[in-house]
Image 1: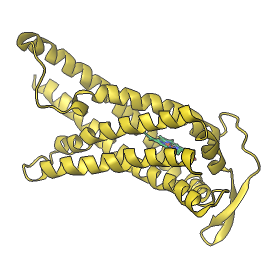
Image 2: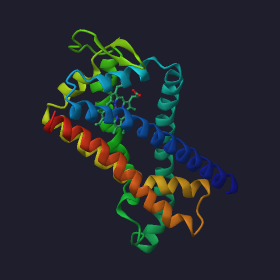
Image 3: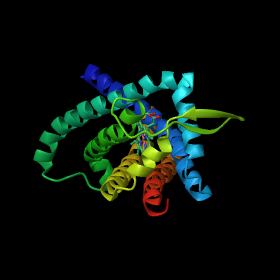
Image 4: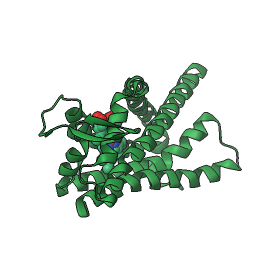
Length: 237
Ligand code: HEM
């Protein structure tokens, strides 16, 4: 029994740490994507800020090391979330049979983490297909000529990632898909962020209510940020 308990706590811990690592990635990703807005607002049709950002990410040796870690982070997070959900369902099965009712006072997101997770992974599969596979040359796309852009005081040359995003976000169903994916992400994070800190042990009475507020802020910044970028590309640029 105690072995089972330690194994379950270990799994939760792995899920929490991998989740927080993924949130860190999402902040970096959102900062890079916000260059799309900057290019749009400045009227840089050739996307010089965004292309410079993508070039930096694509050529920086540190990012090359982090990329496989990111894939591992997603894998760990997904696999352990499935294991834990099915474990909980099994454990709760007999209890809910006995009591005949659901846990009360638990917010919607916390009860639907698996569904939200599946929605995000489905979105991610399409997203990787749309952008990552094309940028890495696994799928052909109308890349057009290489473009030049300012890069740390000099000039660099690279693929026109801005054009790829710009063309993709001209298609309304894709933009709507991004909005749905981002909203699902926001709900997932609104619960996931504070829950991770609770698992790690940061669950004192003073900080837990604050962490819930911070969780909502993180969810709004990330979910809202990706939504605004996709919608703004479609509507304005
Ligand atoms: C407005 C919304 C978004 C835009 C414009 C966008 C854009 C991009 C682009 C252009 C790439 C390819 C970068 C390259 O290969 O050089 C990429 C990769 C990626 N995106 Fe997004 N993204 C958005 C939202 C999201 C969201 C919501 C998630 C996660 C839930 C996400 C996760 C990823 C991952 C995991 C990769 C592959 C790893 C990487 O290239 O670093 N993206 N994205």
